[in-house]
Length: 173
Image 1 (cartoon, helix red, strand yellow):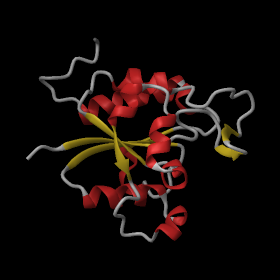
Image 2 (cartoon, one colour):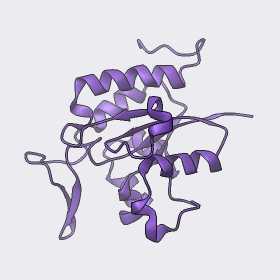
Image 3 (cartoon, one colour):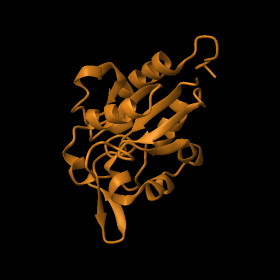
Image 4 (cartoon, one colour):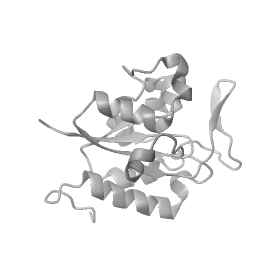
C-alpha cells in the first residue's frame, strides 16, 4: 500500500501576509503594503520541488468559502495548483455550518483519520488543535507568512524530516 505524502496548506498568513477579505468582486489582503496576494507562492514552490510526490490538501477557509476550484485557480503557479488534491472539509465528520469554530488542528486530524495511511505536515498561521502534534506544524506569523527566513528554514527541515525517503531525496538539487 502506498502511503500518501500530504502538506496541509493554509493560505492567509502563509502564502501572503495578512488575512484576505472580499472587496467587491476582488479578494484583497488586510495587511498594509500587500499589493498582490500569494506573494510567497514562489517560496512554497521552491521548498516543495525536491518532493514531487507531496500533494497539497487545502486547510484554508478559502476552500470552504470560495470553493476548491476558485482557490486552486487563484494560486499563480501551475506546479502548485497541480499538487492540490482536495480540502480538509470534504467528507468531514464536522457539520459545515460549524466548520469555522473547529480548531484547525482538529480539522487536519479529522482528515488524517479518514484518509490513512498518510504522512503529513501542516503549514498554517493558526496553531489551535495542533497541541498533540506540534512537530507536524510549521507555524507562521500572520503578518509575515513564508516571508520569515526562520520559518522557511524550519519548513525546509520538517519537509526533509517527514517527506524524504533516505535513498531518494536530494534536497541540494
